[in-house]
Image 1 (tube, rainbow, N blue to C red):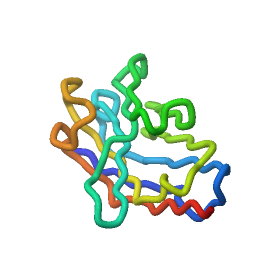
Image 2: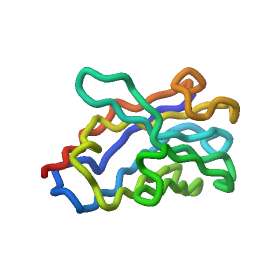
Image 3: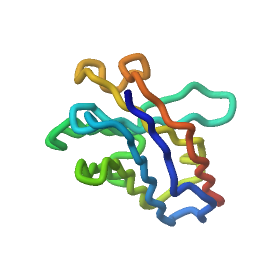
Image 4: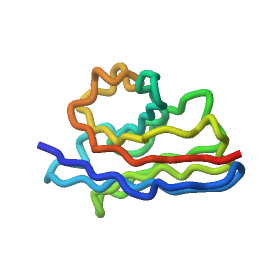
Amino acid sequence: QVQLVESGGGLVQAGGSLRLSCAASGRTFSSYVMGWFRQAPGKERVFVAAITWSGGVLNYADSVKGRFTISRDDAKNTVYLQMNSLKPEDTAVYYCAAGGSIVGITSVRVYDYWGQGTQVTVSS
Protein backbone atom coordinates (compact mmCIF):
# COMPACT_ATOMS: atom_id res chain seq x y z
CA GLN A 1 0.00 0.00 0.00
CA VAL A 2 1.28 3.43 -0.96
CA GLN A 3 -0.15 6.83 -0.06
CA LEU A 4 0.88 9.87 -2.10
CA VAL A 5 0.69 13.56 -1.20
CA GLU A 6 1.58 16.24 -3.73
CA SER A 7 2.72 19.78 -2.93
CA GLY A 8 4.36 22.74 -4.60
CA GLY A 9 1.64 23.91 -6.94
CA GLY A 10 0.63 27.53 -7.25
CA LEU A 11 0.25 30.54 -9.51
CA VAL A 12 3.19 31.56 -11.66
CA GLN A 13 3.72 33.82 -14.65
CA ALA A 14 4.58 32.41 -18.04
CA GLY A 15 8.28 31.66 -18.25
CA GLY A 16 8.52 30.96 -14.56
CA SER A 17 9.32 27.77 -12.67
CA LEU A 18 7.78 25.53 -10.06
CA ARG A 19 8.90 22.34 -8.38
CA LEU A 20 6.29 19.80 -7.43
CA SER A 21 6.93 17.22 -4.75
CA CYS A 22 5.20 13.93 -4.11
CA ALA A 23 5.76 12.37 -0.71
CA ALA A 24 5.03 8.66 -0.50
CA SER A 25 4.32 6.49 2.49
CA GLY A 26 4.98 2.80 2.41
CA ARG A 27 8.01 0.62 2.82
CA THR A 28 8.24 -0.46 -0.81
CA PHE A 29 8.39 2.97 -2.45
CA SER A 30 11.64 2.10 -4.22
CA SER A 31 9.96 -0.74 -6.09
CA TYR A 32 7.38 1.43 -7.83
CA VAL A 33 7.39 3.27 -11.09
CA MET A 34 6.46 6.87 -10.35
CA GLY A 35 4.61 9.09 -12.75
CA TRP A 36 3.23 12.59 -13.05
CA PHE A 37 0.00 13.27 -14.90
CA ARG A 38 -2.05 16.41 -15.37
CA GLN A 39 -5.67 17.22 -16.00
CA ALA A 40 -6.96 20.50 -17.36
CA PRO A 41 -10.61 21.50 -16.86
CA GLY A 42 -12.90 19.50 -19.10
CA LYS A 43 -10.08 17.32 -20.41
CA GLU A 44 -8.75 13.86 -19.74
CA ARG A 45 -5.89 13.14 -17.42
CA VAL A 46 -2.72 12.89 -19.49
CA PHE A 47 0.80 11.68 -18.99
CA VAL A 48 3.56 14.16 -18.20
CA ALA A 49 6.60 12.21 -17.03
CA ALA A 50 7.64 8.93 -15.44
CA ILE A 51 10.67 7.45 -13.74
CA THR A 52 11.54 3.84 -13.01
CA TRP A 53 12.76 2.19 -9.85
CA SER A 54 16.41 3.04 -10.29
CA GLY A 55 15.79 6.39 -11.93
CA GLY A 56 17.74 5.19 -14.96
CA VAL A 57 14.92 5.28 -17.51
CA LEU A 58 12.81 8.40 -17.92
CA ASN A 59 9.91 9.21 -20.14
CA TYR A 60 8.38 12.60 -20.92
CA ALA A 61 5.42 13.81 -22.88
CA ASP A 62 6.52 15.64 -26.02
CA SER A 63 4.85 18.81 -24.77
CA VAL A 64 7.17 19.06 -21.76
CA LYS A 65 10.45 17.68 -23.08
CA GLY A 66 13.32 20.05 -22.44
CA ARG A 67 11.31 22.02 -19.88
CA PHE A 68 10.33 19.52 -17.17
CA THR A 69 12.57 17.16 -15.22
CA ILE A 70 11.40 14.23 -13.09
CA SER A 71 13.59 12.84 -10.34
CA ARG A 72 13.23 10.70 -7.25
CA ASP A 73 14.89 10.39 -3.87
CA ASP A 74 14.18 6.95 -2.47
CA ALA A 75 15.82 7.83 0.84
CA LYS A 76 13.16 10.52 1.29
CA ASN A 77 10.37 8.56 -0.40
CA THR A 78 9.82 11.55 -2.64
CA VAL A 79 9.49 12.16 -6.36
CA TYR A 80 9.89 15.61 -7.88
CA LEU A 81 8.81 17.41 -11.01
CA GLN A 82 10.89 20.47 -11.83
CA MET A 83 8.96 22.63 -14.27
CA ASN A 84 10.75 25.42 -16.11
CA SER A 85 9.71 27.80 -18.88
CA LEU A 86 6.09 27.33 -17.91
CA LYS A 87 3.37 28.16 -20.42
CA PRO A 88 -0.32 28.96 -19.91
CA GLU A 89 -1.15 25.62 -21.52
CA ASP A 90 0.62 23.89 -18.62
CA THR A 91 -2.22 25.00 -16.36
CA ALA A 92 -3.82 21.92 -14.81
CA VAL A 93 -4.14 19.83 -11.69
CA TYR A 94 -1.00 17.73 -11.43
CA TYR A 95 -1.21 14.22 -10.01
CA CYS A 96 1.48 11.90 -8.75
CA ALA A 97 1.01 8.18 -9.30
CA ALA A 98 2.71 4.92 -8.37
CA GLY A 99 2.58 1.70 -10.31
CA GLY A 100 4.19 -1.69 -10.44
CA SER A 101 4.78 -2.16 -14.14
CA ILE A 102 7.18 -0.64 -16.61
CA VAL A 103 4.92 -1.64 -19.49
CA GLY A 104 2.60 1.12 -20.61
CA ILE A 105 4.28 3.66 -18.39
CA THR A 106 2.41 6.54 -20.05
CA SER A 107 -1.06 5.12 -19.41
CA VAL A 108 -3.19 5.95 -16.36
CA ARG A 109 -4.33 2.33 -16.30
CA VAL A 110 -1.02 0.89 -15.11
CA TYR A 111 -0.82 3.03 -11.99
CA ASP A 112 -2.30 1.65 -8.79
CA TYR A 113 -2.04 4.62 -6.45
CA TRP A 114 -2.79 8.30 -6.93
CA GLY A 115 -2.36 11.48 -4.95
CA GLN A 116 -5.05 14.10 -4.50
CA GLY A 117 -3.48 16.52 -6.97
CA THR A 118 -2.00 20.00 -6.79
CA GLN A 119 -3.14 22.97 -8.87
CA VAL A 120 -0.69 24.69 -11.19
CA THR A 121 -1.85 27.90 -12.83
CA VAL A 122 0.32 29.73 -15.35
CA SER A 123 -0.74 33.27 -16.23
CA SER A 124 0.09 34.90 -19.55
